[in-house]
Length: 136
Image (cartoon, rainbow, N blue to C red):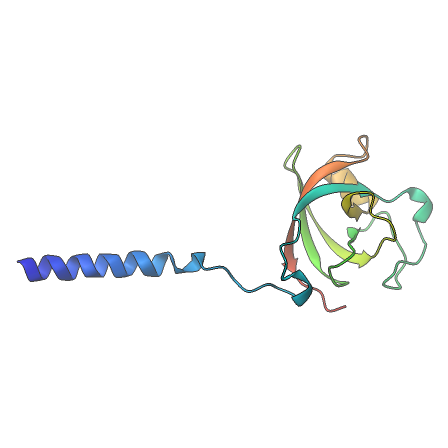
């Protein structure tokens, strides 16, 4: 009986270890992001005066699109942005860079800011999650 209990215990231990193997830290998605990037910080949104102007990626800024400015993620990176004040989330695509940061980690299109519910405030605390790393 001792041998059977030992095999059962060993089998249960193997299952527990196998089930927990997904907790191993994954490799970074992009070499620039090997250091620990801030995934929480302040976000603002573009002024209407930029509507129609060219972005750093070459496309025109559209206040009604779901786009964002980030200074290190490659163009085309898809981010899930969550407003930590109301838990609303939106998916945006990085298509621009900014010369000045003013302590912000992200600038959003007006539509993204509206969907996150911070148009009146102008700034909000957000969490960023990379959903797909861009090529550019």
